Image (cartoon, helix red, strand yellow):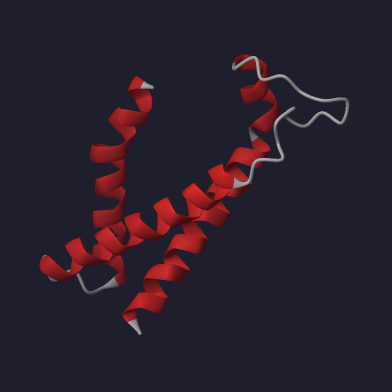
Length: 99
């Protein structure tokens, strides 16, 4: 049953990211100088591999967080939220800020 929770969490994270990036797509494409077609979408939007890689990456990240939470006996929603925010703020955010 835990594997289903990990897969669900991975898809949920991908969905939240998709909504976030869709809302920021136009300013990002302008800043990154992405070539767009006449429909306003990126010229190379037929490649689905980035989305597959994104879903697999989110599932792997959710699995690793579940492993870390299990090893450290994090078993309540509050502890999970605190640990998740800590991982994001202190592990992911500095890496994103550098890029």
